[in-house]
Length: 232
Image 1 (cartoon, one colour):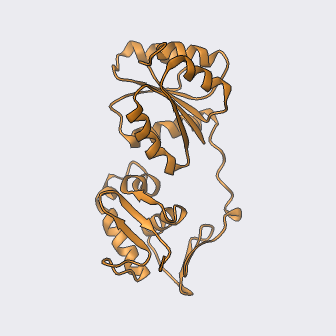
Image 2 (cartoon, rainbow, N blue to C red):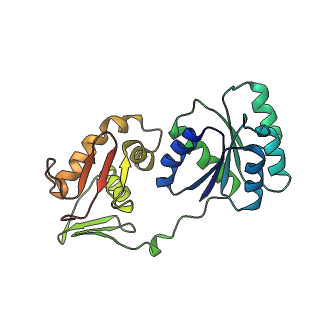
Image 3 (cartoon, rainbow, N blue to C red):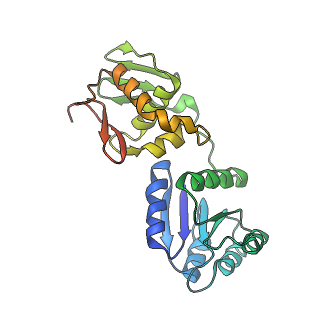
């Protein structure tokens, strides 16, 4: 899904891009109002994240220009948070409003909700068309949830399977703990945050991984976990 951010805070744009890219979003940023409005209506986007306080013209004017030509979902950001700003934005056609004190998980949850309501989220790929994921001698079948290592079937808990599947889909890339929590446990399961290391430990044990020298699941200190092909 293509996401356009119209915000003059380059650091925030980069943080949002870094967080959302592993979730399947192709993120681009524009740091000025008029050019942002032009990009928003001249290309196809799944959604637009729009800052109220944007140079060139404010976010409300940008929203007016977008709505004159497009029904693309728009999530507005504000550093002020006054009720009048939220009301004006929503009346002009914003799909949702989020103060700039948001957490990355809240942003993702609201973005997904906006996309669902707007009908822009593509239907999930039919399970019958999902191919088996192979990492070395490890095979994962997303359709049947079967996991086989060295021709031996593994019995995993739902949390362990979810973690393994998430890591396998990102094979070779590091997944943050927050990304894994969002994908596997859903944002309502606060207890999962405290237990994720335990689930990883259990998963490693069933994969025959030595925590000090793991074959499959490596820990990237200060960031998260990575599934790799043994011997590479």
